[in-house]
Length: 95
Image (tube, rainbow, N blue to C red; front, side, top):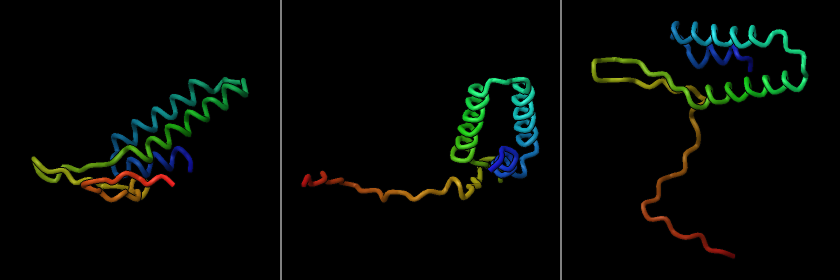
């Protein structure tokens, strides 16, 4: 998925964060628009992909619903299968 789509999904309905992310993305492209080294361009693309993964898997939106309450709004990207909690784990049997 493209950076713009990631930005729109991760910061959905948050105009300040959407604008800040847009400005940062544009700034990075402007700062590197004259780059001609294939190696450097590939490195920059890898950084962009890494940032996209971090945003999609680490950022969660929250909304203040009261002076002392916050509601978290998880995206599907954040929902992962969880290992059930075991109060007294047992050692794995080696075969």
